[in-house]
Length: 159
Image (tube, one colour):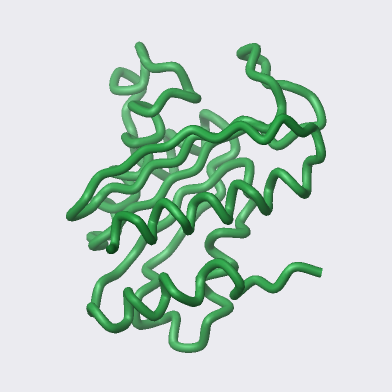
């Protein structure tokens, strides 16, 4: 069994030490990123909120992104995911916004993306994006790998 704090403990400690906050928008990781941050005692010092934005309707409502902003963007593009991170950060007035959108599997997306692909974005004092491809159609394994990659990217931004 995976330990939720495995990937988040260092990031959580850095956020607490720096008195910074974070807001999360995730999709194919299904809440693992938020749950990992919340598993660390003292999370209320840095965690402002998060959403699993699994559909376009959820992105419209939960991230408050107007349709015209996303109209010409591909969902698995760095620009699209960065917009999600930025919107979540701005909506909750957080220091950092982190967004993850991907295809966990076992099948590909309706847009033609294969399983095991994910785009991550961090927005805040530093902005970073990253695409990862696991090459796997194992849904749960991909969810954990996407969460791990999200914390690695966030750690890079914070450092």
